[in-house]
Length: 179
Ligand code: IMP
Image (cartoon, rainbow, N blue to C red; front, side):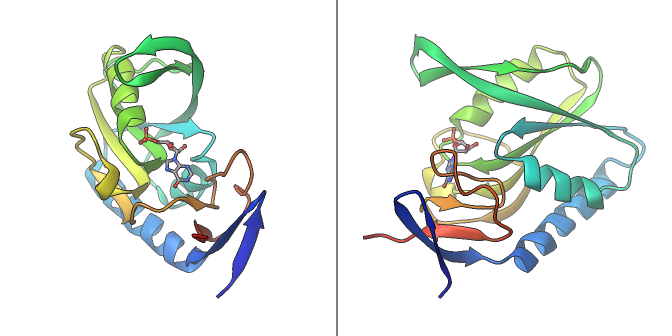
């Protein structure tokens, strides 16, 4: 089994590139059908979604725009823990169909917050498109229309996802080797 080291931890091969790309293609085909004639705005959440967004967009063949936002953490107190500000939104979403592109939905708190912020921009609609979902970790009720793959509760890296900033630059996805 192929393993890699990211900082102080070992990770073993979990999802090979071919399987990821096949799943991404399948979701893009669904989007092409569902959004024909609708000219959606894809809103990719950096940093984690940069490779997924790139591969997804190569398979999307309808007229659309893509823009990128980032979640900046800042000190604050809220019931859900850390408050995260959405920065970098430079597209007018009023009346537009929006597709949020995320790397992974874990507890779902980040996505729930994203939805809350985006709804204030008065888009025509919002759909969620995530590469990965950990159904066993989900804490909030989210309607996830497009999900490439569901995975167990383990920590993963690669294909854009990081461990402490490292490990994003692999073609395959790796899972943490439990010691
Ligand atoms: P949530 O708010 O708990 O759904 O967390 C979502 C964010 O946590 C994702 O956008 C990732 O940045 C990060 N995350 C969650 N699980 C993992 C993982 O297994 N590996 C790397 N990052 C993760």
